[in-house]
Length: 356
Image 1 (tube, rainbow, N blue to C red):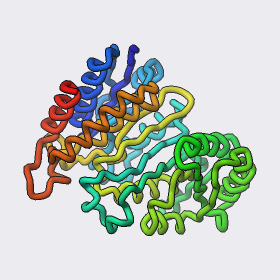
Image 2 (spheres, rainbow, N blue to C red):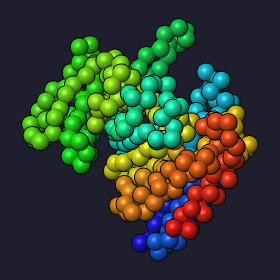
Image 3 (cartoon, rainbow, N blue to C red):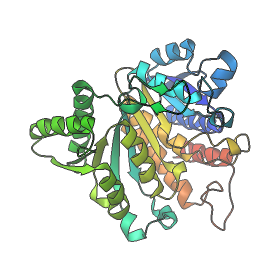
Image 4 (cartoon, rainbow, N blue to C red):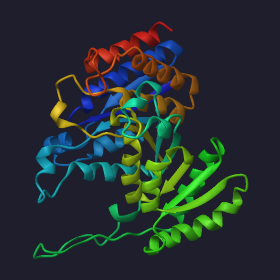
């Protein structure tokens, strides 16, 4: 198979972790006889610095012409620390999601046996935890209009809007994934307070009978946040709106022991995008110390969800697990033993793949 990929390293540690993900992708393609073709584009703060636009038209065209997008991270203190900045790196990410029709963010939350002791929760709570968060990406507060600040700067406002079409498509996707897993969907909303959440719950109740073999339950978002900490193993597929999903997925990621180990997939109408859930970590940029595993595991999701190449994705996961078991890890998860450089971890995983 020919894999035509857009590579968007982004800001901070993005270029460093992306180099390792591309190297792993090339190793897998060599192993399985695939032809890899990729081009690099700019997005985020680096794109603003070069063009004034966080998501240039050339980058969008590259994404549209590709079969999948590998995306690193965006963000820079230069913009984070300036509340009056008119153009921000995050605007590029939101626009990319909207223009590519990336309406669903898929975040698997799984534990690694060798890292359970690093979870802030007791091991018996998180051991064997395995659930999936599905977050709606193109609606809600992040995109609703009107949005802005008053002329005197003392009042700000955002608008939350959802349509039936947006809600139905994300719910059907959640049921699809649940049918391939443990057959349980948890719909998270705030229907006791918000009109948009009441629409979510109404539509979910209409759709649920179409999937009689799948259990459906409903949680208010504050209750869901509590239960993720108390009983993470009680979830299978959790589906929710944009803002709630943004918060809950970051909460869920921490229980596994490290933000640097969790990938995500954003799928929708055009080209799917695969990225780690962590940020750009500008303090570590250029130091060869960041953890590349989430970016590498995002490449595994790309093979699986983007190209339906399950064996290829499984080998990447095997290699990552082997590196963890062998203690070939970066300083964020090294304990007492040697802390490897980012590039050393990537090279170890490539070597593992080459020798399988």
